[in-house]
Length: 292
Image (spheres, rainbow, N blue to C red):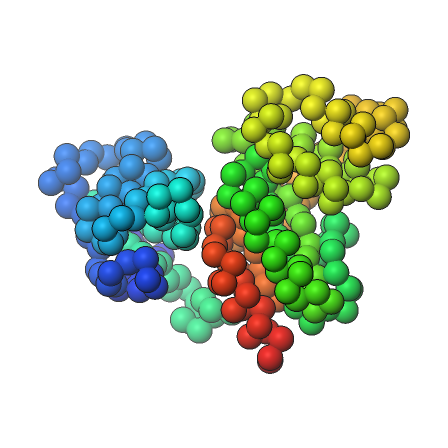
């Protein structure tokens, strides 16, 4: 790979995988040709993990595939047991479909830099919790993403209650328009509700009724504003004017610069955590940060 990237396998994936392994797929064995589509590469990665690494009772699916450098694609693989999402694991596959790796190291940086915290701005985005909280969670999220919904409705309330007064949660938009065409407008609607002091009330409604408005932009956004008792004329003017489109897109660009590739991605005092992880994962990191 011309020295740009080194593929490092033998990454242990906790209790989900029975063991760490060097993962190499034979392109000729699988009939792989040059120019596989992203969908095909995602399917290949999932198939290999399912056949070779996952314990019995677990299943995998590709929830996002995106270019990574000049020679690789990154596949975000969701690991589930029944209806429960256990973890979202990034894996990397070469564009010809011949090699699969569980970890990638960038040779342009010392190894220790791979583990450094990421500096992420809170911007002036909606937040819950004291400004001087010792732990800050910056969440790049997508209103149409089902895993973001899971985090927002199931995990976040637990964290806010357990660490009340000790954490500050900041919501930043990262609409994946290629697969979630209505996420951008939903983000704008939430910001319009924020003008009237009801951002997180509207945020909760969007996630609670995700299946309702995700079928197409309709009068749902106005109806939610009405339910919350907002000034409808002001809300409508805000939404139709597109006043917050650039603000949402700025969040998206900031997230990309921080290395966000999938949603939700949280930065806990700069420590990136990808996917809708079990609540214990977030609790452990927050507790460690509080003890520092």
